Length: 553
Ligand code: AMP
Image (cartoon, rainbow, N blue to C red; front, side):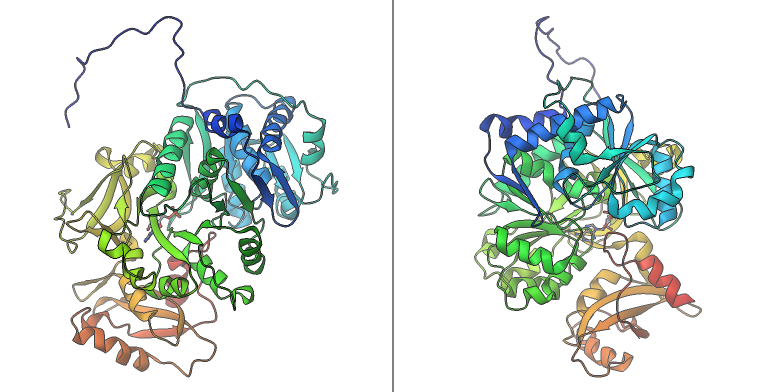
């Protein structure tokens, strides 16, 4: 790609204000409108936006008084809460870096991420004290801890160097902080992603990237489709943890809109369903397995969720799941992205004809990975780096450019270069793209099954198997095979009331798809393992690495 340097530049007036794209600018509109909507934490706490903004100022003063300097990294270990939302703003707004610690990793991995990120102050929910107390000696960079509690002004004894309880510190702090300007390319947030091998890797995002991502996500969620997914009349509740890619950036959008927000704390499906009903939640987002948990919770049994718009992502939803959701009145859309991409890359868009169908009949369109969102330059390339044809069939790796992609991995320059080969971020995902520009993820490159020279998409196969009435959940992986290189193996969870199930039952079921030409006979799994639960990753996605190692050993 060529680059020209001789473009016209006009000098600015000396007193012109060079507006930096900082996270503090995302608060301005709701602040000046004095939104009276509520921000709620479970059934325990609520406040309006005026109080929220004041608490952000108070938190900034607490951090500054505790010795935080611009460029320091502040770790947060909390459930999804109003406190976390306050950290989303106050920490980057004083020029520090918010490290969203993934509390679902193993203790060893949590220790690794906190040491690697060099957290200097850590805000920690009392629930995680038993996890961190034994690690304190090894967390050499951490100077102080601030305790978070669900009870107002609660003091729980800890061996950590705690300076006190969050609520008390906030109460005692000044209610105004003069947030400074600084370079919009300063790092605002970081968190760690766990790949298939090696230690977790730190991704990082600047103020400018988060501002652009927020503006774009707001446009994508609000402007497209007949009703949009998230607008100023909506009520928002995340169901993707806030430590996972800033809850996909939606808290920033919701706060900018000044809408009612509901934070569910520790994920308990029964409580989340109650909150959705009682607080009138109309928009949430989650990985497919969390949706499955919500739909099968006791609380959901006799409920119709009419009007609940849900964005699923992080993994491919099955057709069966989208249909179950539609039958319960949930309007489901699919988004695609990854930790490295802030995350939004694509989102479901229905054609005009599809929009006129019933919600249930829209299911097939709604599980498509979707179209690239504004400003995302997405290509699917073959092994020679050439773009594949837009025929919905040719497959290759998804590579992207967008203004909000992590520019490397923190202190892992070589891995960063691998991610960014040739100036394109390599997602490691295999996909096709149709003539209408609709992307369909087929698999992770590492999860594609190669059997007898054939190429099998584990996601396509999961989709077909999950439509069997006896099957509640499924994961398909390729296992080494001397003759065929690899063979597909299915791990399934049966529905409570289903009869005995075997590889033959599944084979007979899949045969109809072989006869119709949808799959080849080599695609039928040669092994079916029935389990109580499919192993999941720290954010509730199917953990194929773990499944493979369990099945091989
Ligand atoms: P993470 O970095 O943990 O968020 O994982 C990102 C990965 O999740 C992507 O590279 C994809 O493999 C997968 N993923 C995310 N969204 C989708 C989707 N809509 N369909 C299929 N896979 C997805």
